[in-house]
Image (cartoon, rainbow, N blue to C red; front, side, top):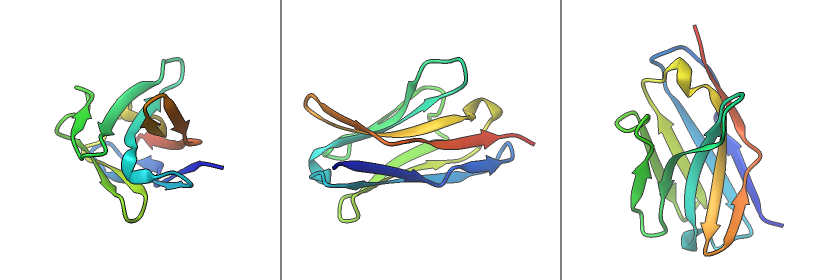
Length: 115
């Protein structure tokens, strides 16, 4: 059974940093495009950042210059480094793996930015 397990969420003050990790199992990780999505209460899930199997990245405008997505294929792990966090970044963050029409989701990790 494929698993995506996120970690690294928590409570942080505005301006602080967090690094999220997502470890995949039972997939050919290097072949998958990986992404981070988030969903705030009462809002739709939105793409935060994505990285292709070849390492190309794209970001939501709201996080450009603050967040960095990266991957370590040997560890089957994708990371999201989040700096200069704002209260509006508060959400549940989900890891996503995509290969053609096959999509997997993690269970999510809560990020709360508050003083």
